[in-house]
Image 1 (cartoon, helix red, strand yellow):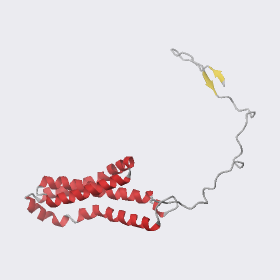
Image 2 (cartoon, rainbow, N blue to C red):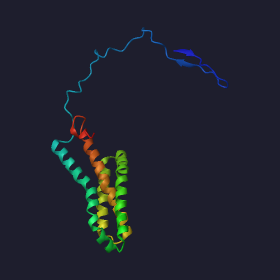
Image 3 (cartoon, rainbow, N blue to C red):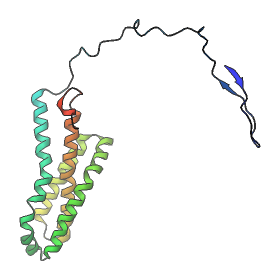
Image 4 (tube, helix red, strand yellow):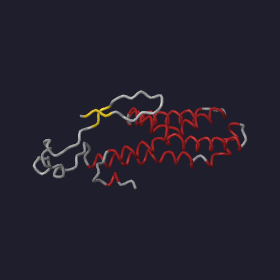
Length: 184
């Protein structure tokens, strides 16, 4: 390496730095790529720890779990007036539970997905099922509007996050040659 002094400007202290030597062809070259033996990675079969029936079961379970968010949203609409009567609240207030459910359903997959990326899908998937089941039991036994509002948001967080985690779980169990990775 040869020492070069860069041009200076007012107030700067000139300090030498090392410039790389120019290759004049006298240095040894690395071996040609054709002479180095590389293992043939294309000859091996795609590897998965899951058998085909296990993959199908995982896809089925993730699909059923992902449907809960939609079912919980639509099954609630016919019961709005009876719920308002039972809780002695207006239908407009009970409609607020629908709005809060949808807002949390829009945000929960991003939050749960980030947590799943950091701590793994299995614990987060279990947490979401626990939130969903706990919220459903709480909704069944509660008798106040604020309780319904909070529990509907918890229910939404548990159910809508499962669909996103289920999809990433299904995609993650495939390899580049399977149909699971063609999410387009």
